[in-house]
Each structure stands twice: as structure tokens, then as C-alpha cells.
Image (cartoon, rainbow, N blue to C red):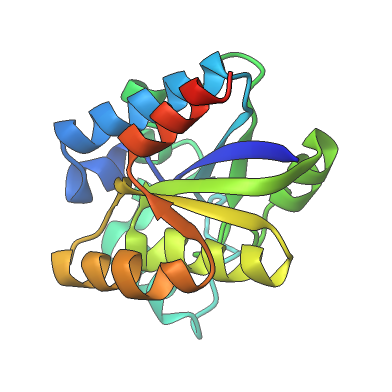
Length: 188
């Protein structure tokens, strides 16, 4: 069973809005543990080409982002870069997506199949966005799933709680970073 850790939308601009040092520390710990256990770490970011040809006026979420944030979501914008606290190492895949789910508009599926991955460990910002959408799609694609609840963040603490305590456990194991890291150490 191939496992991969997904670090999703932990971009500089997103961290500024929803993250904090404690979250970044936990994410960095999960990334370090995965690397130490030789588990691939796959980074996912959302960004668009100049002029935003991928953004439909029918898509409320992204058309609003383009209107309000403009070039902040451009592919070369500093705000769309992976936060330096969890920066990818040379050779670690960085997947560029065009929608909320990490699978939509990206080559994530090809990367995961090439790595022989059947079990995803999900982290990211926001719990109600990329984590929820990716979890649902990954479950439909028959991946085994684990969510590191304290390595996810959301603008609404109650939404985060309901998702990690009531919704996600229907399709995934939901654990803390500490539990996951301890489990990795126990199985070495």
C-alpha cells in the first residue's frame, strides 16, 4: 500500500488569511515525518494563468476571487507560492489545480498513480474547501484516506469541528499529527 502526504493550498496568501504559527509547526512536523518514513509528499496549489481563462463567470467561488483578489492568484504571484515553512524539496511534486478539489484541473491523479499511491493523508487550508472536496473525490476514486485534523484550518472553527468530528470519519481515519507521527515511528 503506497501512502502519500498531500499538503494542499498551504500557500503564502492562504496562510496569511487562515493559518498561524502553530498550524505551520504541525504541518512542518507532518512533512518531516513523511520524509523520514520515505512517504512521498505532494504539494498542491491553486493558481491561474494571466487573464484567468480557467475561471468561469458561472463559478461563484473563483469568479469572486478574481474580482476581489485579481493578480494575487496568478501562477507567478508570491501569494500562490507554497509557504516557506513547508517548502517542497527538489524533486517533490507540486501540483497546480484550477478548482477547489486537488484533482480538478490538475495532474494529481497521474502523479499518484505513478507513485503507486492508494492511501492519501490529507492536510490543508481550508477544511471546508480543498480538504472536503479532495476527500470526497478521493473516496469516490477508492483511495484509503487519513485526515490530519490539526494540520487543517478553516475560517470557521465550528465548520472545521463538524467536518473533522462528524463528516470526515465516514470516509477517512481522522487523527492528530502527533498520533500519525507516533504511528509512523511504531511501524518502522
